Length: 330
Image (cartoon, rainbow, N blue to C red):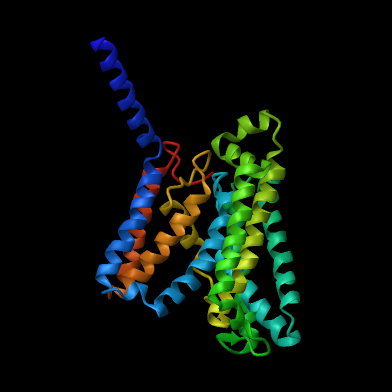
């Protein structure tokens, strides 16, 4: 009898610690978010939660959240897209040109959406057809879009252009931003958890060869995943432009690395696979924005903030990498 009790106690303990071990990165990510809230509430003397700063937080979270949710489909495959930052810059400039010429937000958004879908298809398909790592094609797009961004701005004769014939600030309304984030979040949650797209992208990240042998058309689903990300990039570009009302040579340049940091702060390994979850994007984005905003409110200079982010990035990548010896995605 005593042995049976001890055995049951041992099984319950192993079950408990097994659950903890399985969800360790989820626990750490939530703890990181909670710590950010507590620490920066204290160090900012409560300014973190004043009305003005909350509006700034919502504006900042909106763009990052939409991008991170879209990036889930790409990062779950163990891939990445480093061209997203310059794409955002070019899309913002193109929208300004179209808005100033026609005053049509619909035309501006449709134009940007078509370009984003084409870039997504290029990223997903060309890498497969040429047998290249996905990061190579995204680097190609990064250089191309970087050049386009520079040329477009140079032709204006200024380092910055602004929206003049359209009230873009209407999209900076907190209610609109929260609504769009919720809609995008619900769509991504459903697609990622209850459709073939989410199932297959995670399978590709876990083991692409096995997924292909099971009958998954990996090329097709890679293209669709990148195109889903493209849709989110197009949507996010509207709210990025709404925040500033202008765009220039450096617009969007840091977003590629920022999105990567958002996702890994949420506990998602860069190697992707079955550990990829929507909550990784949500928790990671909130943590990243609170970290950046809280450090600024606490009086930390910008150079030190970059160093802190770099250290956090390195530590989390080393801790969450799924495949030993494969820190970076394929």
